[in-house]
Image 1: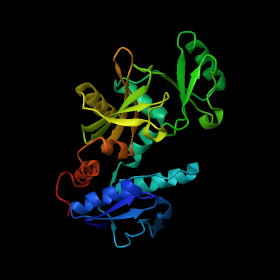
Image 2: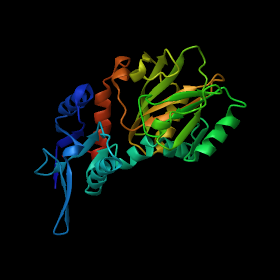
Image 3: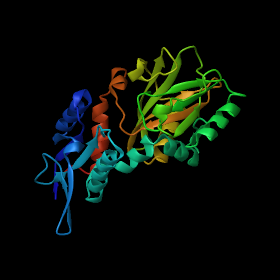
Image 4: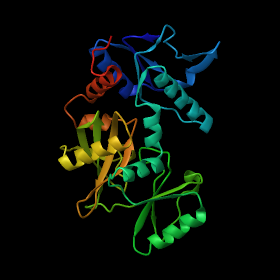
Length: 303
């Protein structure tokens, strides 16, 4: 049974983003509760499956907005995703759902999907074997100045390392045995610069340009956000990237190289938008909740 008109916002710490979403739902006449995945459970009684969600003892939520999937052991993370898969299987729309999260949070898988769907993305090399990784970098540095090493799971620019001929070694601890290496897109100017484009449904709705003091421009790493128009090329490229990973909404990171060509570097299935809101006049949470409710109810009014 689904408790109509009541929604779950999944997060450990609601903070600014959680309260923005709650206010946007209230403006639509809908109630919401904050839910921690650590407190949920799956149960089978007499052959009947049950999903236990605190605050929803009388029925499952009308929809679930994912603001956070906590980290933990492999088993813990898989369990959290099991909860989301179970909700979808029970008829509850999850935004973004477990499959979308899995396709985007794994950088190896996302890069492969971009290439498979013809979305321009930097040259990427992913491997388990240390010898193959070192051989690739030796060949790479014969013709290139830099490469970027990234943990395959990570966000907000954390754990990235700029490799060079003089320092060709990734952070072995952060790599955790899988080496994800990517072409470094040389910035056009002296400061690093990229774009974050928010796509909801199949349409890019907002964008900002980010500039950093170093080679990383993420807001979480001290980058500064600036207003940016939705250039048709960047908007269309962001929309294609979101289609490639099959998401109802996402934050897409793009860069331009020194020749002006645009590249998709990442798609975020649980994007923060505080920096984007600071340079955008329209309320981002309202846009997200409009997309969320359309996703939950197929464009019909919530019951």
